[in-house]
Length: 87
Image (cartoon, rainbow, N blue to C red; front, side, top):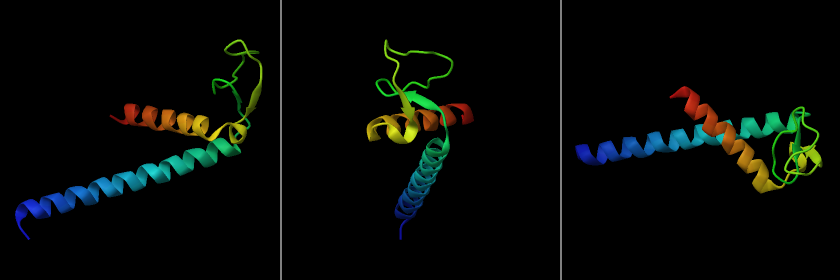
């Protein structure tokens, strides 16, 4: 195995390990959000907080009741924030 091949193999391994860590991290975030009693707007997926309405609507649901794409968006937001804070 040449030095270049070795380097590429190590790089692929590191990328795979990083992907696995992010998947595990995303799974942990999903689990936490599913266990939370925080409510989200079912139209724009913003947390309710202390507001009575959001985006001119007032329908709030648990994370587990949001559409899959909204759940993925919220999880990705937390991953992005974590990455921003750790750099």
